Image (tube, rainbow, N blue to C red; front, side, top):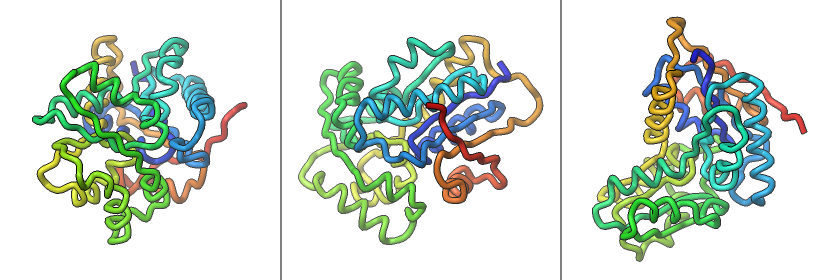
Length: 266
């Protein structure tokens, strides 16, 4: 029960989920892997994404985590089922949590899904939303410029607002009251997205719902951490550690994070 929770993502986006888990479960330890060297996953083939996700999961298995959160929608869409079958601990994705948050919030049953090309092509959100509500209309939109913007660390200032507004232009003639941020990088751009779609639209992240799922599973299985020592989070990046550090410290609002370079066994 005092083992860490593993969180994986294609880059820094999964920090939005890690932060939600830290806030809801402040006693838990997080071991995070961001595959920043191979980000973004959205344009990659399913097999590449599956392979990369398994490499991260295997690395965390060796670190003796007690559960795994796939904090990447693209990876959830292609690798969740296989990991759930073969890993010796619970494995959660973020897509069902995002769909659930949208159905709770929408009044008109008109929901936009903003995601990577890979997640949109998978149809995973449409399937998840339809399993919860047959009335819901889904408007999917791939936003390929958003992840590189976040990973660069240049996501503040007017340039980011202009780039996001341009990416959301196809929605100008659509009617909707709810937006799912179907990529865990996108909550870092939440202010820019809200400015583009207007204050009357609910813009939702899957992070908080995912954190609730983590709490429910650990509570049900009797694995909530009991150690009275403060948790010591460890974050790993496969690419540039300085860039990852600058984004992680800003987003998590924590100084002196333990951030390590990681390479994967083939």
